[in-house]
Length: 52
Figure 1 (cartoon, helix red, strand yellow):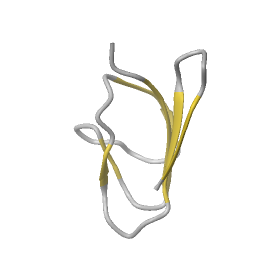
Figure 2 (spheres, rainbow, N blue to C red):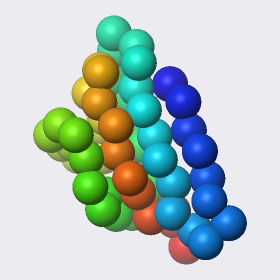
Figure 3 (cartoon, rainbow, N blue to C red):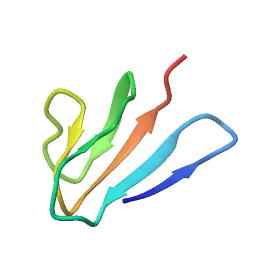
Figure 4 (cartoon, rainbow, N blue to C red):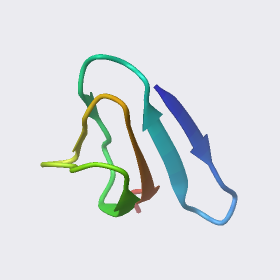
């Protein structure tokens, strides 16, 4: 898993692993695959808005 946070607030999260990853964010802005219940599947990237 690789996660970058931008000073403007949004983040990019890529799950390179073979297991799902719980994002822990309020809003997924865009993703390269289907995100269900805040869980990022393997081999998927999501652009997210942080909590708060």
